[in-house]
Image 1 (cartoon, one colour):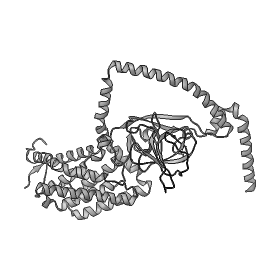
Image 2 (image 1 turned 180 degrees about the vertical axis):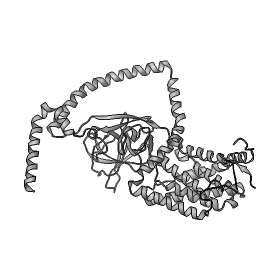
Image 3 (image 1 turned 45 degrees about the vertical axis):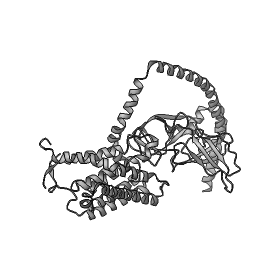
Image 4 (image 1 turned 90 degrees about the horizontal axis):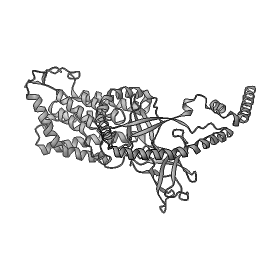
Length: 165
Length: 320
């Protein structure tokens, strides 16, 4: 269906996700910060694969690397791979029931952590502990809520008349 | 923003397949990682990108610093008066200590001049504020609001009122990334103030714990011992408090003591840090400056030193 659609809500959401990754939290809450950027990216690639693609995943990754002071390219490569996996299966996972979709998100977030630890291992900066997996769990539990919110945003963008754009 | 339709979206990569794009972007990422890891080629690229992202960081941290300022400006008058009296008393106390300090410093300088050593205890200090943004949750790193524009440099030590905080690991233009002493990748040469026993304090990744893994079981370490920076390695100036030994424990069958220390600086409460610029780095010829300053005491020493130096240089030229 060729329908005029505004794409700025997607970019706004991704920008907010990026900001949420650096918003200061109390020290005890640090480990529970959900991986906002990966979640937002999975959603938009699944729903709007024509406008949010691998290029954006790469750029977001670079931005994360700079802001977190990590190896340049580490988040870029993980986000690109996760984006590719999502893009490859987006037609199937889009029609999954919610619980199945949430499990898919769990798998994608796990892939993200695995690739990241692999690179940490190669560069010798690996950290012991379950820290990253707590984030995966929090992210998975958050997915249904996040999806409900983002669905609203998306539907607003797809149905509203766009005469003042 | 222009209107676009799902079908007719123009794009840079739209003609190529996702698989090809994946391969290209992965190769690009790997090249970036190798360059960033192996050498310093990407330092400027990182700096430029960080400047681009600075507005975003400023935006995130703005509400937090505004909130702090607001709470500051709404502090009750009685609290301010009480705080003021307290500060006055403390200033008086510290001034009286400083009087002795001036005499001690002069004596120290005289003695050092006699020993032909040009180490200076004085240092130039710049105050930096911590930017309210979080870094990687699994590292102990902070962002401060002084960058290469303010002469901050990589390796510059950070202290607070109680002790050493960490060091700058990456300078951006308007801000810098700093690693705390408790980061798992950080190590600082220390000595025990009581007996000058030297060791290295490693970060553990926990904000309230340092560990000293390389002291033999017969080393004289007691709970409550103050650890100060030893100045070895050249990054940190000597004599600043680093931590206090919390636990020193012997485990049967182990060659080394199991020592835990508590960082001296209040790492989870700091808002401002002091950047130390060692004077040796600012003065081009510290030997000359020291010689003129303490000429009365060290004239003869410097003279003899110069004499021996010229002798040795002539000797070497003759040898050649």
